[in-house]
Length: 80
Image 1: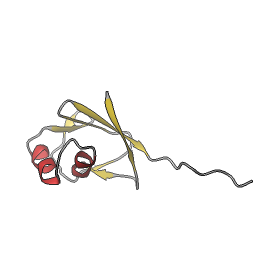
Image 2: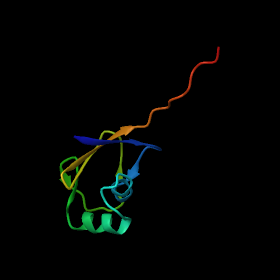
Image 3: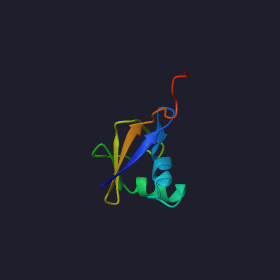
């Protein structure tokens, strides 16, 4: 099973993603895990803590898969 995250504004930084999903309890811990080579993006180990991730990419960490999707605009309807 994977975690699906909607990306607002076009991208999210890798360290922020790990913290936002709860996979890492702090930004410092996320940095340490990335530096240790424990995080991969699209199957390749990523060492840049602030790598910009975009919809369509997949992040693997600690046996979890995070899939990034584009944020959709909801709650809008044409006026009658």
